Amino acid sequence: MHHLIIFDCDGTLVDSEHLYNSITSELLNEIGYAEYTPEICMERFTGQSWSTIRLTLEEHHGEKMPDDIIERYIRIANEKMNHDFDAAPHADAVLKTLSTRHQMCVGSNGERNNVIKSLQVTNLFDYFGEDRIFTKIQVEKPKPAPDLFLFACDQMQTKPENALIIEDSPAGVAAARAANIHVLGYVGTAHDTEKQAKALKNAGADAIIDSLIHIETHAKY
Image (spheres, rainbow, N blue to C red):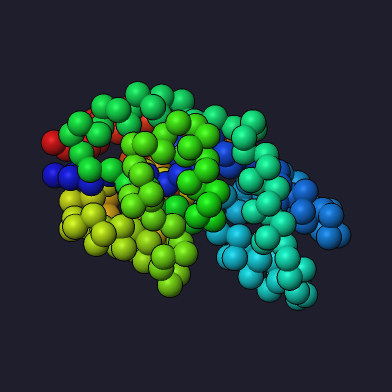
């Protein structure tokens, strides 16, 4: 029985992955990596924290990124998020329904201030409040490590076997699997739903949903 539903934020509750990957592309192009189009960034970096992206790129290209690149990313995202994205389809109605039957929280690899602001901008913040929004800064390792989801369960006083995770990225699904928690792969905001469904299934998603309204059929009462 699922007493707790843990939502990823970007690409799951908030349709923001395209915006964030466009910013990533813009920054990488600026510093000389012209090959990183928004589409390539979506494919390679969705669901990953910028600290992980930075390490991956430094390893791949054999050189250091500018010291302030993460700060630049956060600043640009903060400026653009007021007008460049919306809540995921049906998010408000689904959260309203689920909140009457389940505990809910957020578990995100995003920068904490950006996650909180994105939920405020899309009017979803009040379903959680700051004490039920958990981000990578609160744990040792971000997704795909299980730390964040296990921390969320601990904070919400729920055993992992009584939780259900909603995730849109392979990194998030892998983190759920590592934490031994049931996970639904969500493709409702994906650029290429078929490709993303396959990637989430390969990462170990228990089922794939193309709309948040289908969470109810998987969340046992």
